[in-house]
Amino acid sequence: MNAEERGFMAELRGDVLDAGCGYLFHYAYYERGILNGRVNIFHGFDPNGSLGLIGKRIPPRLKNRFILEVNTSEKIKFTRRYDNIILRYVFSHFSEHEKCIKKLHAHLKNNGAIYFIDGAGKENMTAPSAMNARAKYIAEWNLFHARTTVTRNLKVHLDCYRKFLNQQEFKRFEAETLNFYLNEPETKHYSSREIISLFEKNGFRIIRGLEGRAFGENSLQLIIGKK
Picture 1 (spheres, rainbow, N blue to C red):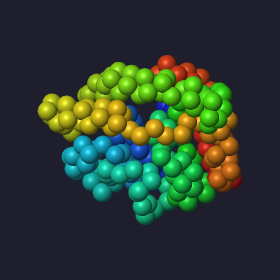
Picture 2 (cartoon, helix red, strand yellow):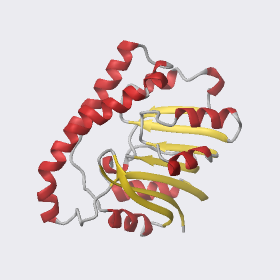
Picture 3 (cartoon, rainbow, N blue to C red):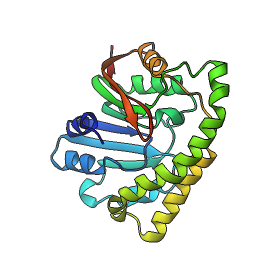
């Protein structure tokens, strides 16, 4: 987690949505925000079925304010609007990018903010020639990502998972996560410029943006608000 991400997490307030990451990367920030009264509700979701088990074991002191559910950005039906939304390496897993962005716009409060970070290329990756050239690379990357990055990230955060899962349950959670990445349908890949354009044409503005390297690939990091 870099300084930009830590700064955003430290300033979480009101109703917070983590749109699709079941890794609990930011659990300590969510818990701290609720306990000090700055965060009212935390809502997280992910397609991984084991997330439901974790959700049932959230400490009683966070009951009704820390909500985890098994769902996807395309299918979920929100019942509230959020002050902060986190999109941490989930955009590339959307199957319907524009539909999801419009849904997030409808459920972000007017003065709210989105923290976005994801891999992005500098070339036009939606062009047929670029897509064909990348097909083999993407397949190899998904396999590498599943077998190394995902496993490493889960184990780095093992202390967090020990709060909720025994060893056997954690192995199931890890296996389900790996299976998700290995069997995920191929989705459209965007360049940094295309990602920004997609947000801007759907009612958002870029408050701040950075490009760099993360997990061995080009990374785009944005703070996004409504126009």
